[in-house]
Amino acid sequence: MKYTREPLQLHNPLEFWMNFPGAERVFWVDRQSDRVVVGAERLTTVRDEEDRQNYEYVFYGDTFFETVRDEKWQGLGDEMVAFRHYYIVENGESFYLHAEEAKTIERFDIPDVRHDYHESSDDFEDWQQLFGAIQRDIKSGHVKKVVGSREAEFTCDTEFNVPSMLNKLVDNNPGCFIFAYEKDGRTFLGASPEILVRHRGKEILSYALAGTAPKEGEDRRTADELLHDPKNLFEHGIVTDAIVDNMKEITSKITVGETGIMELKHLYHLRTTITAEDDTLSLVEWGKRLHPTPAMGGEPRERALQILKDHERHERGMYAAPFGFMKDMGDGILVVGIRSALVIGPKLYAYAGCGIVEQSNVNEEYRETRNKMKTIVEAL
Image 1 (tube, rainbow, N blue to C red):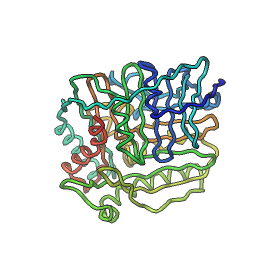
Image 2: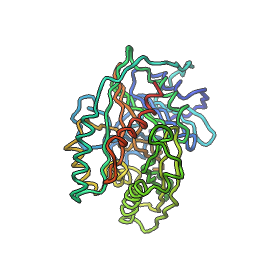
Image 3: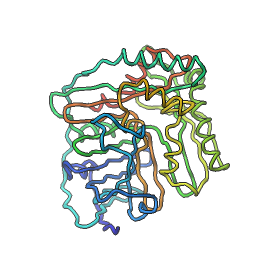
Image 4: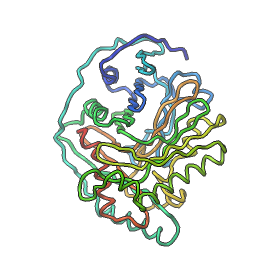
């Protein structure tokens, strides 16, 4: 497919998003490398890796589990999509790509909305039951770690304003990947700090991001305390080892960086960067291979996922699943869709999870998920 390229400089990439109301569209701002990709109007569903090479940019979004039961998640994820219109900012350039006819791109003021909302769910009892089930399996020796998650429902007096939320997510989350995917009146959005896999030529990069400490509140800790905390180091080590072992099945050329601190607005995380050299698997193939790491599912993987299927009361949908972009030559990046929410009119479903190991405390872990949900709540 041939795209036409035209110079286009916008004050805010959300202006491009707002030119396509009601259309299927995707939003991506990489605040680590200042790349922007905004796509609108589905051109086609990309069939496979060979077909992907026919399009300059392709969006890929998956679901956490292969099957989706909850109606609100139906038809979202588990596909590659090429769009008719793209706004791109990369390598110091800014331009409009379009297949077929161009659209006149109008300028917009980005709304700044303070939503009048309330939390319309109470899931602490569900959390206690999930936590108890995970702890029983840990104590029985079946698993070392399971990542439990929560779904919190919020209701607004009016429809939630997605452009306002996205603008605040970009402003509030330096170093993160701000994303959104809208289809059929539903928008999945968030600000993820975690790279599942990045593909650049032969270089494959992944983050081990596990182990968390709040910067405020009754459980607050310093970065140095987190870096030397046995419980969090144990949890982090499970993730690092699993990613490395997975990569070793494909390549022996692997480099494990030093474990350090990733600082976010409200939290510290332990982070280890892992790189490998490979030219046999595509970005999506690497994504499917690595996902879910023990930072999203647990260890051993299959047993942990079965516990989640049996005991989590909500549907994860695209939460914590691979989300990102590929270019025609195959380079691209997939993050995991965490610090995220699904917006449907006046309803918003926010998602957050945390790794549970034997030393975990049910109340502390619940507070950790509430801290993680601040990413979404502050955007309201």
